Amino acid sequence: MRLINQKPSHSKALVLGLMPFLLIVLMYVFASNARLHENEDDKLLPSFSHMVDTMEKSALSPSKRSGEVIFINDTLSSLKRLGIGVVISALMGLIISIPLGLIPLVRAGLSPFIAAFSMVPPIAILPILFIIFGMGEVAKVALIVIGVTPLIVRDLQHRVEEFSKEQLIKAQTLGASTWTLVIRIILPQMLPRLLDSVRLTLGTAWIFLISSEAIAATEGLGYRIFLVRRYLAMDMILPYVIWITLLAFLADFLLKKFTCKFFPWYENKDKA
Amino acid sequence: MNAFFSPTLKLLVAATLAMSIGASTLAAEVKDKFQVAWTIYVGWMPWDYAEQSGIIDKWAKKYGIEIKMVQVNDYVESINQYTAGKFDGCVMTNMDALTIPAAGGVDSTAVIIGDFSNGNDGIILKDKKKLSDIKGQNVNLVELSVSHYLLARGLESVGMSEKDVKVVNTSDADIVAAFSSKDVTSLVTWNPQLSEIKAMKGATLAFDSSKIPGEIIDMLVLNTKTMQDNPKLAKALTGAWYEVMAQMKKGDAQAISMMAKASGTDVAGFNSQLKTTKMFYDAKDALAFSTSAALPATMQKVSEFSFEHGILGDGAKDATFVGMSFPNGKAYGSASNIKLRFSDEYMKLASEGKL
Image 1 (tube, each protein chain N blue to C red):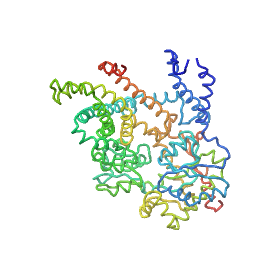
Image 2 (cartoon, chains in turn blue, brown):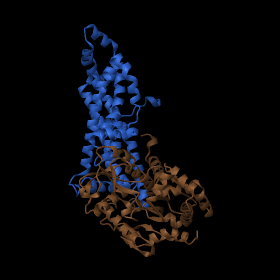
Image 3 (cartoon, rainbow over the protein chains, first blue to last red):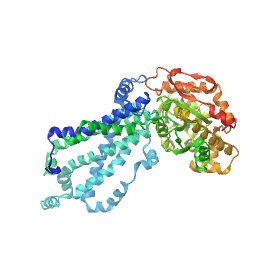
């Protein structure tokens, strides 16, 4: 049988899927052991038990100063910033992209600007953002919004432009105004596409969140990583990285499930 | 199962890959090629000049070795890379030498004491004049750095402690821009950022490192084992360093202008940074400083500060966890865990002209 026609069974697929993860863990254990053998205090590749220890001692038990559990504190404040940032970006994306994709006059006026604006790297104009948004929570959310909104707008604009002309013409022959078209035809069909777009830009949102926390913060997942990086505490950084990966994976998974549940027609259409 | 995934093969692949990462640590031995990391800072620009002008090569050749000075853009990253074993030596402050390589179990030796900050680090207030006005404010600084230490010492001097302020970790790259933001009312930073901010409207320098002279020290640190196995490395570096120092002491215009240019400023700007840096142009002065009683006392303060902030590592029960040794047999902390050594051996050779 040709290679492209060989399909793995369910269990085999599972084993194959787990293989790269196992390989990485194995590689890590080997490398970590090799380094710890030379220097038992090595900070670069700590053992797993050491990471668990550190997390228990410094991140998961209430801090002596404030009685807060820093791991939970960090997670909640980061998720709050990320959540607000992504929701604002999604709403703005939706509001801007529909007229942009649907109305030729708006497109002519704004499309080149948005295409250009989306290329501005927000990190490079930070000093200006500091003066406009300050250095507090607003600035962190703003950085996510500025980084993510243009991506969503451009993606959704293309989705609106791809919209089947037949539906639009049919609705117009039935007397729909532009407003009715937007509310009754475009918007409902754009929502699952918006969720798709959010899923794709979530990675970018995380990057902006972590950079904003690295610049100025008092708590957050990115703050902690950049703080303890100062003394090479990989025993804390690696668990945090795994946790961020897990959170990002979960967010993606939940958005996908959400789309399946509330817009079943969308997923099915894709497969057909 | 495919033969491709046979356990033996899997193990082999993993082991080979792991070796390539794990074995990159410095297995100390006699060798003839070395890499030393440096970052841009007024007190370390002589290293760049020594490399550019061929002085390093000259001294390396004299001892029959090769030395490459590698510029790293990010200061902390350069120390991390050194600690991980990527470099044989690195420039750093006394505090970072204690909390990063030494606390990380990498036995390190301060071979050359180049200078101490004599105003290069400072606390700036916005629209306030006295340091005591800092009470209750947010203070932007790079947490766990010498800025943090300076703040603690400054607060101590006016009878306050860190509890009286709120520290906001702020990247040193963004701190100049941060000062323009209305949320920022006080900050601690170092040069060249410090002089930029000092010149801005409403800024007052309320405290600086000249009030705690000799406590923020810039030095060249080598991996102890590499250094012991290869004394030629320390000799060549020390020789090159004091050749540059002699040129700077004479006010060699070419040397100064090269250093100024490489650090992104002009001669006037570089000279003003030199003014707030107490350079040890003579090996004798550095030697006197390293053998003084003040050095162990300073390191004890730094060690206590580091322990209070939890950066001496998990194993640390108190500030004496990481042992340090000083010239003339003086020591501080755990004698069985000496990881930071201040050596006067090579500065002495330089002062006696024996290099």
